[in-house]
Length: 286
Image (cartoon, rainbow, N blue to C red; front, top):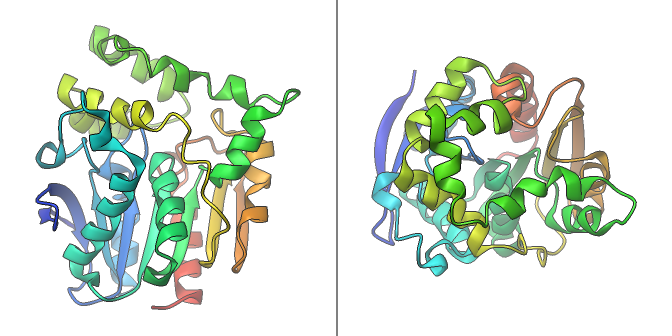
C-alpha cells in the first residue's frame, strides 16, 4: 500500500519517505510535526493513492539520518532551509515545474505556512493541521489575559541543552507521558520513537526550535486555498490562535474543528482528517 524509499534532493540530502500512488500523478507532500515522524501520515496514504494522487511523506531534516547536518550549527536548521527542503522534496518526487498539494502538521504546518508565503505559485492547495497561521499564533502568545503562553511553555524548555537527554531518559518516559499523553495510541508512539528515539535525531529535531525562536512570525497573508483543521481538545494550541488563522488567508479558506480531538490529529482522528483533506484537494486540482 506504500513504499519506503530514499528521496535525494538538489541539496545533496537524502530523505527517508513513505510514498504511495502512481508515478506522474499530482504530488501531495505531507510534512510531520514534533515529536512525530513520517509514520503519522500512513493512514492517509492508501486513500490518497486510491484518489489518484502521488503521496509523499518524508522524515524531515534531522529526522532522516541522510538529511541530518550538525545541529550544533543552528543555521543548518534555519527556517528558510526547512522551507527549501519542502520544495526540493516535491521536485524530486515528480513535481518539478509543477504545482503540488502541501499538507503539514505542527512544525510541518509551520513550514507549510512558510512555503505558501514564499512559493504560492508552486501550490495548488494548502492543508494545515493544528498549527495556526504564525501571526495568529504570535498574537495569542502575546495576549496578556490568554493561555497560549502556558500552552507553549515547552518551547522554552526545548532551548535547554540538556532537554534531549531528559526526553530520552527512562525509556523516553517524558515523551511518552507528556507530549504523547494526549490520546496517541501506543503503536503510533512506538513508530515515532523508532525514528526520533535516539540522541542524534532528538538533538536535530530540537534544533528546529533553537534555530527558530521567533517561530517565523513575519509570514504574511496566504494566497493559496487553505484548509485548517484543529481539534478542540488541543493542549498545545488554544482557541484564540486557532480561530484567528482565517484572518491571515486572503484566498479561499475553510476551518474544520474536530470535537474531542487533541493536538496529534492524524494519530487520533486520521479517517476524518483524511476525508476533509481529500475533499479540499479535489476542490483545488493541480
